[in-house]
Image (cartoon, rainbow, N blue to C red; front, top):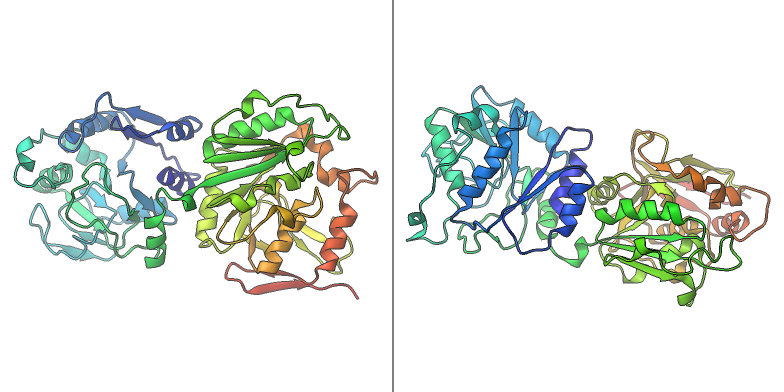
Length: 499
């Protein structure tokens, strides 16, 4: 899943078509299938397990499918690699800079072959050519292959005898060796980037667990610290992606749409069901809706908690117990299929040192009222660059790693002003809040709920449960000054209390 999220993040706006080939694994791939299905991408499963010794047969199936695709070159990735920032642009730049008759471009530098000057299977001498080197061989961890080179291979591998592993069972599949030898003998250029554009994760190979040579990444383009972080983010609680939201009676239809959009994108979804006879439609949920009965969903009635109805603050009920990535959402936004992936990627881009979102505000001076003394960056309007802000709001998603900001349910002392309480936590813990760049119309709200929002009630004249304008203004004033911090923690703007 981490690799798929990388592909989606770095391939945004590009025509990247994904096919996942599963060699009859016994692992649970339901989450992967759901992720791909929502994006109309393909999941192909083998009828029987090929394992290392027959992997060439499964690769021939992949090559046969590739032959039917209209493309100039193809990218092959194993499932245990992670991608560098701006991956596809860097790959394209390196590929376009290669001389004529380019066959393959290896994107990974591993410790065992990083500094070898002789082709490991062909005996070719390494020739450095700026950002790339002519190596005379390629490896299967991550490589690009031209359509013409694939045609020269006949879109097919020759059979690999079991004799290959008689004396050395730890040898790999032999696929990289065969591709290298055949293409090199036909005069194709086989290259490798000087800086690794992928990271091989720190996990035991399922295909070749007895491999002796090291696949550890060296000279990663984004630096050693980032390489280490990506290597270790495999199967740990720190990888978990949890989304939390609160809902109110009367939003059953919009909630159903939000759940349907978010569920394939996360590991867990928390839903806090505010329920009060005093609220409009207070008996809307006589029982738990069927669309909330899912193994990945934790749905909780407000009346079953010590806190009761909390409005939007209910979405923070689980905060103390969550580990990993926490995404705060609303129940009335039409979230796109790459929403969560982009938020997680942004958290990683800022090295898990900042909170990010697509909707934010900067307080302005002289500060008088919260809804009047601020500059808003709305999630529905275009934003050309990332902007440090005082407030990030749940409507546009609020994403952070739980190691960055400590959040407890008790921090939210009044309902229906979760953004203020959250912003105050960031102020006290000196954590930057960043409103992310995004195009116009990428995020849109459900028009059926606009008249029932906290914003509409708090900017109106009617006093009711959801009108918290005066409380929000008071809390902001009582906690002046409010500081905007850049991604590196430097204070770039301070709003002082009016004298």
